[in-house]
Image 1 (cartoon, rainbow, N blue to C red):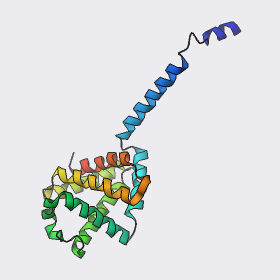
Image 2 (image 1 turned 60 degrees about the vertical axis):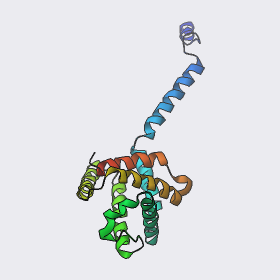
Image 3 (image 1 turned 120 degrees about the vertical axis):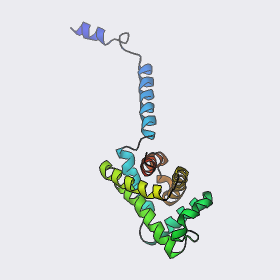
Image 4 (image 1 turned 90 degrees about the vertical axis):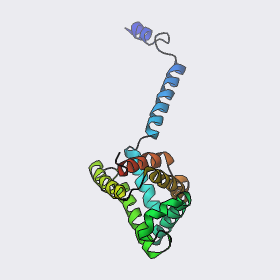
Length: 179
């Protein structure tokens, strides 16, 4: 018996250690690559935590909104026409700040229910209807996402997980666009 068990575990009958390590490394790489595009449970948790820190409280939220809209209108000056009814010509006005608060509250709501798919779908369906009524096209959602990818890291520093943010923002964006 001892001879048989030794023979079956001989180096000639098992794959070389170097090849096995290479196979494992490739598999780990593939899993990491696949997860980079996924808004999975870990990514959703990260987004919730990072958003809570970036969103802050009180006046911090107002400053975040100003940063977002300043960057957004710099990239999309023609989008101001969609905001004429809420004082979009002056992002510092009380009227626009109220609108900004509603928009960021909507973002906050979407992020807070990322892990509750049924609720998220209902919220995104509602938001999709609101944006469709106003004729807001897809490129503005792309720009808004790009702006978030600039402004949020400025709030967080090194803690920002861009892959998780891009993957989870895509879920929100696609939902609002009705995709």
